[in-house]
Amino acid sequence: MPGLMAFHAHPDDEVISTGGALARYSTLGEQVVVVTATDGAEGEIHNYDNPNEIKPRLAEVRAGEVRDALDVLGVPHHEFLGYRDSGMMGTEPNIHPDAFWQADLMEATARLIRLIRSYKPDVLTVYDPFGGYGHPDHINVHRVGVAAFAGASDLGRFPLADDEEPWAPSKLYWTTWPRSRVVLMSDARFAAGRITEEERDRASVSGTPDEHIHTWLDVGDMVDLKLKALKAHRSQIPEDWFLLTVPDELKPQVIGREAYVRVFSRVPAPDSEDDLFTGLR
Image (cartoon, rainbow, N blue to C red; front, side, top):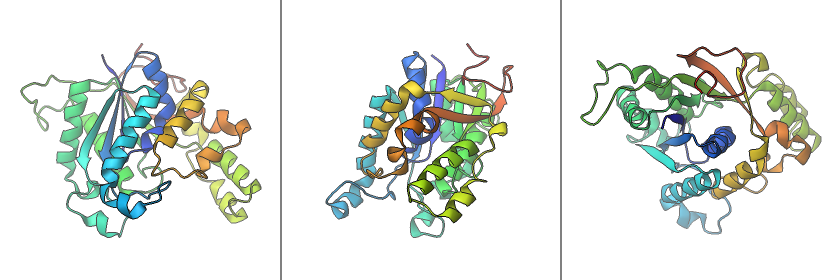
């Protein structure tokens, strides 16, 4: 059954930006698929007393964590695209031959197209051109995701395998952090003494301007599930992480509302919508 495919960079990203959508549409009976580009091998290690022992097998640990998180959200389908975590720009992992940042664009796009043709999603979500915050793997999720959305129907560049049928998603979205949410969070963190006044002021002009956002998804009833799924990523999410310390009165706006920029739609859709499947159902 066609549904939603969310393409992400590392295990844990799926909860941070799309956890509410994943849970909501799974609950509504849509087929929901998460594709993770990398193994997360370069992540930090929190909540363990033996990080030096964990590090060599962090990819294995994070594979278990993403499965646990998706079980919380009710998502049965998960795929790894098969690349190594690229780390940050200028670091040694970034030039590893198996790193996602070093991947051939056409090869990586073809891998994602194979999954698109297999699962046949109506909706594909990726990141904005900056990958949200500039991480190489996030930037590449944008590049590869947009290319796969366009290329899935291009049988000349990406011929069908023996067991494939043509398929192209109908709608493409960028996940994003709206400016209003960034301001709300930075004001709260400044009031709590967690950031400086300069950091708060810089945040006031960060994020996607609200008027550029097409889709506001109300996932207020999924807040507890999102937080539980975040905590399933034990190695990556410390207890004092900013989303785990959001004051109760701000949770509906910060955690219970997700924002998406609709980049392309093959079906008529209004400028403002509250459902990723608007025009499809």
